[in-house]
Length: 369
Length: 137
Image (cartoon, rainbow over all chains, first blue to last red; front, top):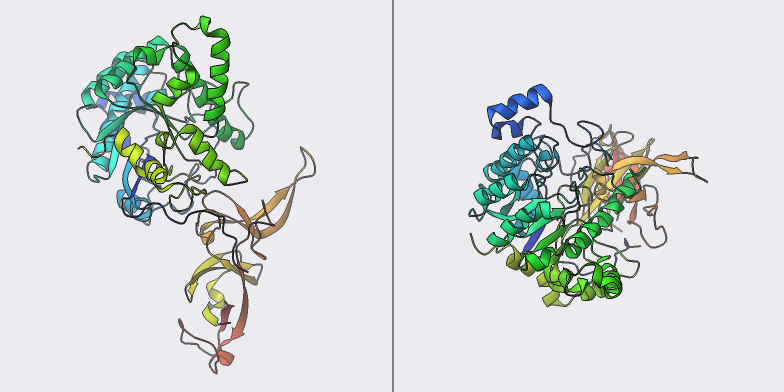
């Protein structure tokens, strides 16, 4: 008896390669970031430590699939360093094995969520320097994200100004669990800068933040947290649309990273229905909410939904639009999607090329250096 | 059905697993409390190597607040997405009727019997004083 194979196409487009929109680079050790900080902040961390809003200092709130806080168990390099901290092994295990032509780095370090905002800004500068020094500089297939501490919009804009002309940076990265709903005007200077430079804003699902992971409080189980990620990203989208962000910044582009996408059609339908009934409350929303959703948002695919009937995935792709989905692996995390096997539905070859490569090539302008 | 001598019995300690290539197939052999079991070393979900997964037990319960551990050391959890498979049968825990990895017959034979054939001995020069692991594809 043969092992059961799910019905799926076997390979991603081989010839052109894949663009992976979600790779998590890691520090070799907790001290590594210190090399990229001014002495003042190294001393500060030594004396006062690095505080985040997490309830337990130095630990994930939901320490998942330990050891390694949620790493693929086969992602430790032979060098013994932590997963995704060893560029050579990252290239071998991810870029080579999965035929990744370009990969977008999404650092999950603490800069954006420290309570001390000056420290947060310094951490972001250090993390951005580190991405270039360690990854995107030596390996041209990898591109970096401009990490900013979004609660201090002035500092965030200054960092975008410093990096925007370096084409090794291809997006601005903000964690979605901001102190206020992200559509509020305190964050608009960041949107203005991103639009000005033509840089998309990547909103990566955040395990860290000022708020509990569900609207009714901290969940009991990691399984609930994993699901709550898509809830929190829906609130982000609704906030930006209802506050009128896209009327003010009509060229702003948002990438929703690691929140899934099966919920996008129903969110659009629901927003449109309520807008028809209560549009007078939000005169800044001049068009149907679904039109802003359609024009301004892109979605990365991992962790890809796995419906009982695979053809339903094709329905979702059609409803959302094959030009709005971008493949991602989430390497080296445990819920990694392999481009050769993850997308279990027959797709039109043009749609497949868009999802695995073309959309991200165009959005991030990856042909330009 | 071809048989392959893949290693010495002592190469797979109790409670551990090893990956072997027999013919063109990657096989994971587990030592569960002294008994050997062989399954394909490829998760049917996205293809990860099951040898790199955690060997574990089943946690189940009849109602909230109750739990029990069963089948200790007889389940392997995929190193990527955590799908659990029965090492003895290859069946998936979450979907045993639709999803399984192929399992293979595995046996142990003393070296002195192997020296006479009929096995395809690819890897080892067989010594008569050791026991060897044989997989049937």
